[in-house]
Image 1 (cartoon, one colour):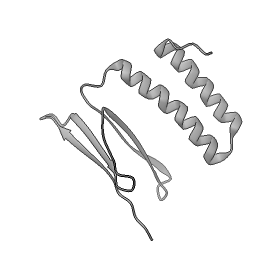
Image 2: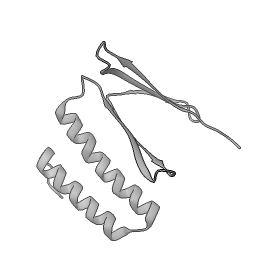
Image 3: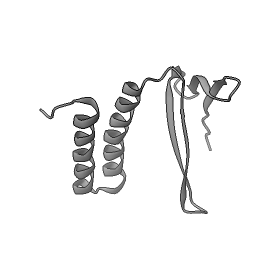
Length: 109
């Protein structure tokens, strides 16, 4: 069986607030820095989602709004691929469009 590592390294200030987020994916050699990370893990034993939500001090509110908008769209795509629930995924995309319009001033084309 093959294994693969994805590593997330944090540089924290004296108050344990992230100043820098670095990540690396071993398989494809990707190495990058980020201003934010949202990580969700399914705990099958507890049947609950565990999560890690981190962002750096430099992440602006406007960047966070865009980050969430893009995550909402990605979640809809992933949900549809994983479940085949196209109708519900479309409703999730509708909410993402609403969010984008009200948070980012985006207009649907």
